[in-house]
Image (cartoon, rainbow, N blue to C red; front, side, top):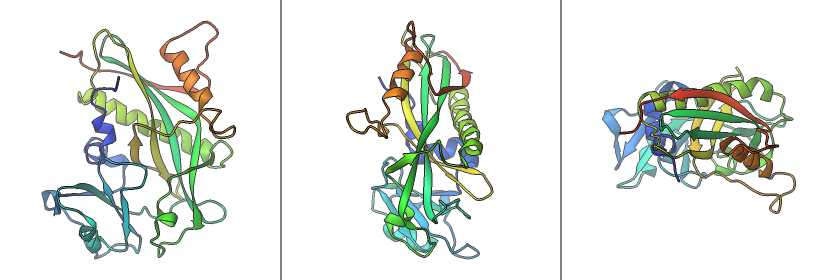
Length: 263
């Protein structure tokens, strides 16, 4: 059973309403119009690509790339809702110059009282890495839009510093979602979901939240011996439905948040 209010995590425009300070500067196009008359200008901008993303879709299939803010509207279709963002400055690249982003896993659970939420973040995860060396002038999707989980993240040198920042960012999203009544529990029912968040790190060590994936890629050992999620799923179930001999594994308690009981 899906968590009520998950649209506030899934829809990029709603997430920006919730946590604008954790995301890159974001503009919105609705039905080929800039929302609230707020549109980006080409003037005074760094020479970095722009992304036009359908607000309620993931997996990178709905992301378009262009060179200037003034070109973004050309990519919008009538009746569709988009978020528009410029590439972050000074992205932290792999040692060989390729772009990457963090695929960060989260388990969110609401207890039977309908108001107590518990958040866990996974200490492992994945890097999604472009197959090409990054350049701001290369507007190809293969270079600018990292999608596929490429390798486990624990061996990545910046991870020990980046992990607690990603954890704190996700906790702030959930804290605000609960406090503002965006996330709703169900009386008498324990509900949970495993989801993922996409972060990019810059050369200053700051992490930028881009989106949540409410139906993330999860693989078992039959799919891949090296990049499967069987242990993550089993240990999540050990938290939700405790059993003798169970263990949280690499799930890390990230916070408890108490909201209003559902009507």
